[in-house]
Length: 139
Image (cartoon, rainbow, N blue to C red; front, top):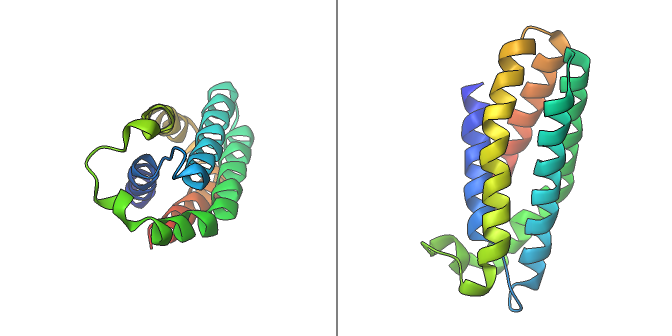
């Protein structure tokens, strides 16, 4: 569980720094996709009342992150300067804040559902899958 939290934190930090404007239109598009996925994940978790639903939401989120991982890694190489900035460029502020808010909301909702359904074997497997996927993103 700790590895999952660390991986999600790393991904959110990398993604928040890498949100783009005109120069970074490709990064902004990825940031929007990631925010969409995180918001959908949070909504799915909030509505989940059984372990099977929690596991399904986690599995879908992990699949989306796996799909976006190559693009994220490519953009981190293309724009290494974004990773060194304390604040994103002004034109990136809006997308940065949206993604950051989605990621911040995700953590407490996910923790709550893990407390409620963490013993469910499907939820355990889904949590491991998300953790592995998030660690892959931070490489």
